[in-house]
Length: 468
Image (cartoon, rainbow, N blue to C red; front, side):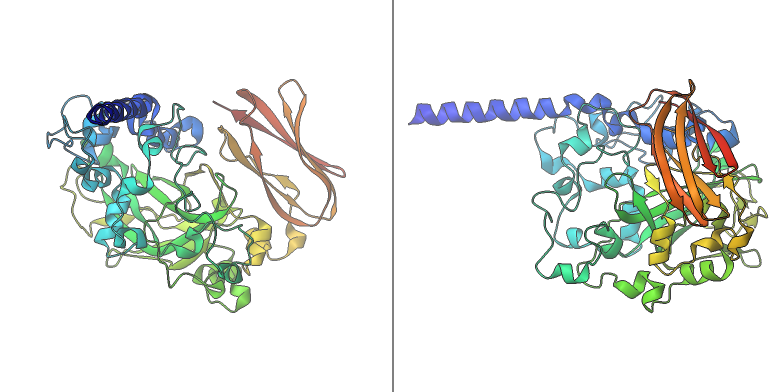
């Protein structure tokens, strides 16, 4: 009996050792190691802020450790060239002791989740005593052997509400509250809020490695289409300014850790056509625009729209916010300050949206929005036009938008540089209006492609560049 017990103990120990060392074997390709997400979003070839600043992502003051955690899990300050490693999260010689891991190490980098807590928002999972790693398994943290560009890229994060052991099926009776037939992600209704830091002052970052933003925004959720699963989910944004005249905004899916079990949104919180009063929809229908953030120069206060904010299909023209610059010295200590001033515009010089799509005209209509207000309330004023795809260059998806002045037969084809038809996006009768389609080049080689729109005597072509 003792021999059997001893053999079992040895076998168990070997299993733990092998499992423990095999799981982190993929760490070299994990996002925790590569930190690829930041550079992917910033890169000029992906339509990022680098295209406006000209500051390369290799600039020493753009490295991670100066903005997030300043010490590793041993409490030792980062010095020299930063190289992500196990000790960022695991204290030395504690690999087999999960109790040694502290959530503070996670929140040192995942600062939005930390801010949700300091703002006073609860989360049903935290209330139940769950830790980060109770949801995010080893593949999320140590990688799965595949290199990803962003945590929003399909496959990068395995954890989701519908995972086995979580909520693989809706509770009994829940269907009565979900007429969308699974088209909404759980967070659309159950996330109390998204948050974001407003107007990061990039000059302070570049010159002094200081992360300076004007304010933290809360009490809102963007509604966007998730590329990961095709569902409508929660989104947020990041805005930046540089050299007092360059502004940028990035929009993406947001994983809110402000989940509520009771008090979730109901129909009238999102649908103006169901009797709801949604400020963003009211403004859009009245003006054709949604102004998310307003800055008051008189007292340097900031206000943002509250509640549900649907991101329109032509958001590059309709989604607005005030952009501001810091009036003090770029080396000033980062602290609350009213020393900010307007740049003088509410439309960014650049924007990008990765692994996320704005709502379609059809989805907007279902919320009680008037899609034609994106251009003009009078549809007779539409000009036949094929917009430049966005982002461009792109990898692997891009959005193609066009307007039709009349009803008619329409084709929208994508060709490669040799004139070979790659994909047909539209082929049939369409009504007057604005349309947006998503083009997926994940199965195509890098290169130049052409989108060609034709309807009757009208033909328009746009050049698209796929960079992988």
